[in-house]
Image (cartoon, rainbow, N blue to C red; front, side, top):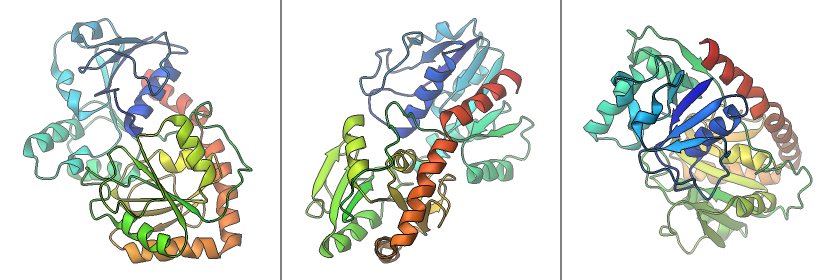
Length: 331
């Protein structure tokens, strides 16, 4: 079957883009896949794209496909355009209006995506509840799936040697209002650094805030470097107001690295005291104390590490992709 997918950009490493490209690669094993990117058709350097996949920036190339998957509100205008595939889906990875509060134009674009009368595929239960509550007139189905980890990029390594004093913080710099604008992650890290813990950090922006806290900081690290960081860290700290389903905690699980998560809503993969510890966003002291608690409770840390390794292998792409493909073919 011919399947077209939209992608807003491919130039910069990003969890949401990775998931779109993972779908494309895996669907291309059994189907003809076209990626439509308005920003150009140059394949990204940071992730491998199957040579079977056609990449285009020409909207006319979407004709003659059986299915169109709109993977971002950026491309929601394609729903009503002529000569588009008859069967359409919206793949919603997040309530993206939260990225730009106060931007009414962007809110309108996102609202059109949330309220569309085509099937929506999403990855977050709270995103689903939001749409069902705020768009009751929709008469198209909503499907819930999850994300896996690419084990070629992030192989399972259950016995990494860790020093028991290294913390990795993802998303140190924040330009997104739904992530960590209050900097509670760096504030907790500052206290941990004062206690003698080693602080590693990475994000997609140059180091700016709390620049004297990190022992090592990496800007847009390669997949090889990410694997190294996950191997070294005992605990991953991730703080954000809202998320749908983030990639870094699952990637860290492949190395037995346990996440301490500060979040208000989101990250369905992370079950408190089962494969992580969760605290409410806004409280850097509680985040700090929770990290210390996990270091102090070695039995709990061992249990969570084992559960992380089991979880990421059970809920792999081999688990999710047959469900995703079934929705596309039969939904």
